[in-house]
Image (cartoon, rainbow, N blue to C red; front, side):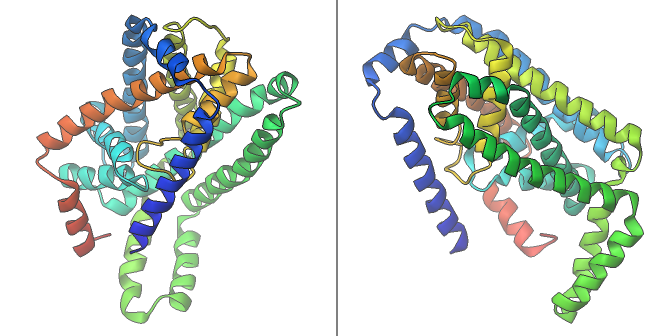
Length: 337
């Protein structure tokens, strides 16, 4: 019942944001912009995006090294499956899906995998906020009268506290695993019924073990540097797709767009981030004096180019694993989850 409620709320948010994004537009002009695009530019955009996905697979391999050495080539299909799951299932189910597939293929516990996934998300959030803060004064100058810059600044400041706070918690748990587990036991003894305590503590121990890669400054620096490279590569796709359309903004503007749309996609939405990607993307380009119909055409094509190739690849890998989402839900309902 709760999952159904979340689905409908996400659908309502997506519908409202998509309506707001297209409000006042002549859809014929948007369609003309889409038809007139030079789609050959999508080819290098897709290539650089898959390089970024490979870098994500390497980063996950690095985070998992204290638990098990898994080659990046073996991690890449699992990461692609996770992308596919995030794109077509609600509530970012792809994160749980890739942890399940990794356990199935490599025997790494789901709780330890999810610890590394949460570290990835916290560091991704910090990089996105850095992209926003790097360009925020410029955006305020460009669009100071609209109020849009102020809303982005507020979102960035709130997000900064959330992602930085999460990163600090994970670091403390990584460098003081004994104290972390003692704190977990303290809360477990007071909040969890006695018959569930052993299971909860076992899952928590595996979760803390999954943070081991963060125990050295070098390890943390390597993961953070890789996160920056990943998001610069993904911004490269924005840049290539831009060349399919008759407008031009600089790379820093696209970094800002990338940061804002990815922060916005943390808001509950329909699968595929419908609306939460499109509305802020169009607004950022408008702030840089791009015609709204052209900005809408570009953003919709970019969204499709980000969504379709990795979703198809992830679906292929998932079919090769001979698993289904229904089976995953059933097994996790009966087992570790």
